[in-house]
Length: 402
Image (tube, rainbow, N blue to C red; front, side, top):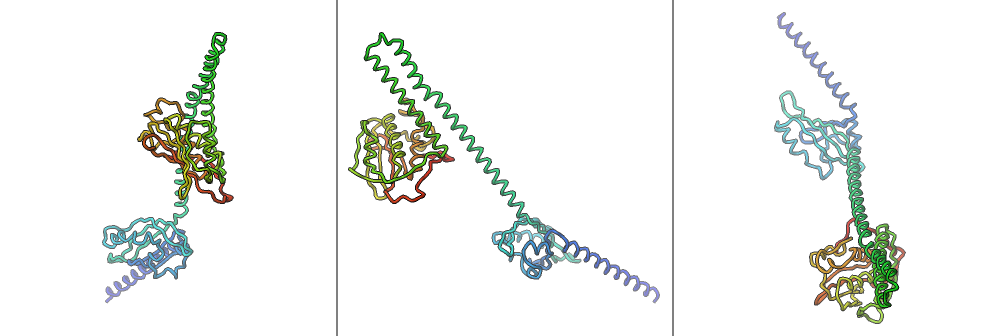
């Protein structure tokens, strides 16, 4: 009896100490759980909240009472619902003890919360799954900073690419200045010096011949300078298009005055365009037809259902098929056909496209029939201009293809 009494007393003491240890453990858990600045939750194996600490309640914008008994999917972003299902099944089957997951929650005010979740499965004394303990870290600000950083890097990369394009374009301009502009100037200087040296011995006809060659070279240099200045204005966004109601038939006849060009147009046909820009466009297309095509050159003005069409056509060899997609590119020159034997900067059609688009027009290429090239400018029908009809020519990030 005495021995039994001693055993009972010892067992009671051990039980009392176990209860004290359990209370101390629960107190420590409660202090850690409730006092943590990290969101912490306990859910049952069905995903229902059993306990929620104040940090998690604040993170979700809901009180603990509102959350207890609700499923985690109820406050999960719809696109992330079910993302943890496979990991939960692996935990319950004993293959893993926990998992990490990035997911999004929906705050009570509708905001989206990015979070990093660490989940661990808790078992009872017999090893049966009981709860999932989760630590939830708000990563919304970090994710926003990361996205801003990536956006900044993308913008820097884009700016770097733009600078490379600008440098490449600058190199093209310098090459053009050193060759295409120098060539006519050299011709003018050479002919001038020759004319002065042989003035007394030269006949009147020879003098006139040299002067005409100098004048032609001067016109060539002037056209190149005009193209360069226009290109600079386009790149700087300084060319402003001011569309107005204009008689296109009259404008076309004025543009081809003095040229061996046939005009097919009604007596009067109005469109909505910037007259100066349209004259530049037609001047470039006519010069292109004379330089690279063959006569006859014909300009046709026709009224269509939704616009007025101006077609500049010649009967030369046309544009090589492989070059058509690059026809309106900046500094583009065909590597076959008549272009290889004719001087040019490759800027004319590029400037035509930019001027046309800035003024609400369009320009395109099509093979002429039976042979040759045809460029078609479409001009809108007239309408009452609005305050925002003034448009600015801007340099595109990517050179448009025809």
